[in-house]
Image 1: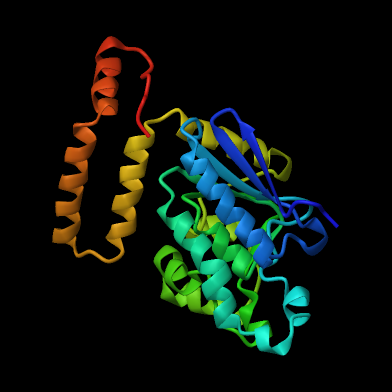
Image 2 (image 1 turned 90 degrees about the horizontal axis):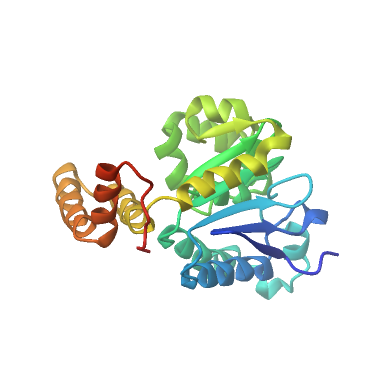
Length: 262
């Protein structure tokens, strides 16, 4: 068995977080989810960290909830809703609220909760052999980890329903064509591409990225008039920040900006 369920490695300003249960295709357990939550907290608190990459060890990204581990629990503890509330939802909340840009590098299969976890990232890059499987129906369950919210917004209700109700694997190339993910690259180039994208994000204004993420989060609940009012407020905040002054000066002086904000 692997010792740590999550490996965290710093690549300059990028925090690489690797789900590390390859013998179970990185299936989620409470320990792994708690480790992800702790790593998100420590990375956000680290002023030198400016981007995050998630990937999976071994042959797949994540196969979802570890059904074997769940089935081994005493019957009184096999409450799926309670598991979501106590183990998953705190991590989902931290990931959604994370001010840093998050990139998912999906290698191999991303199934069930693993697929929907990947889709919570700001940018999803998949290896050419990767696939996304909404496998909940095989277990008599419904999509969770935000899947019923995320999927219709990314690919439309018709495709989201069929993907979830049929449970058929969605190849990476089709996921790209549908607008579910950002990019597909050769498998052996996946991690390098994800780290390069994260490095690009890390070289930009962290404060502006955090405000942009706030605006996108709010857009799901706002009407158009509410959203443009929010844009105005956040743009005023961005415009008054040191990074805007630095960005304007760098543009006029034809040099790379030296960002200071978080």
